Amino acid sequence: MSYLSEEQLYRNYLEFFETAERKRRWNVFDDLPWELAERTRHNADLALCAETFCGVESYMPDYVGEGLNLFRDSFGQAWWHVNWGYEEAKHALVLREYLVRTGQRTSRQMFEFEADLTKRRWKLPFPTIRQMICYGALQEKTTWMIYRRQLAAAREAGDELLASIYRFISRDEAAHGGFYLDAIGACLAEDREGTVADLHHVFSNFNMPAYDLVPDYESRIEVMRAVGIDRTVFLREVFLPVLSRLKVSRRELAKAAAREAEAGLRTRLPMDRKQ
Ligand SMILES: [Fe+2]
Ligand SMILES: [Fe+2]
Image (cartoon, rainbow, N blue to C red; front, side, top):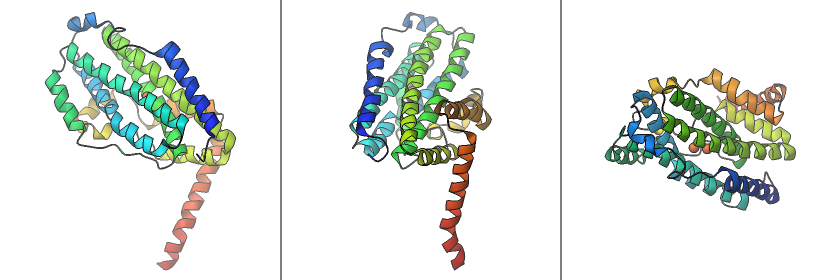
């Protein structure tokens, strides 16, 4: 492991796991007011969003498989990754159960939807562990924000069952984001300049995972827009708070951007000379 010591990663993993086991675990079957399912008023927009998030979470085999290949030499990171995958799988399952038990989708429709999902594969967006840690922090914080907004929308629509589901999921997403932020903090302590460069690189090339892989994505976009996440919101509500929590200044980031631009220029120059 070239970025963080195994001792550090193991400590981070154990702390995350202990808190999850003692305080955060929830049960799909026992902890939700499923008795409300049959009385839930159907809401096409909320159901479409729930189905889309269920689709995104359902790429768990790719997230875990690709991640494990990258992290397999690190005990702390690999074990954390599997535990994280278990929690993401639960998110897909609970949203699926919600759609079927409320009668907004049939079981058959969900099997067909899932069969469609598996036709496409999610690939790692960045090649190094540290870049993926930076990506994880931004992705989890964005996901948390999206679920918090859906929680408010479900409450407003009077869907207490869906609101309870989003409450549990968003708590998990906050914990995932926290793990990555702690890992970035440790990376910064080890190699500040390199970590800031990775943060800048990931931010400049950031996209949420797998949304474009979900079937009929184009027709979902309109409703997804109501979720209200665009680049400005991402900058204001995700990236800047992440920087502030990490105590990385915008000036440091600008320096990293200048270095990246300079390095890009240097790598292009030999080609330029040939032309
Ligand atoms: Fe999730
Ligand atoms: Fe997550």
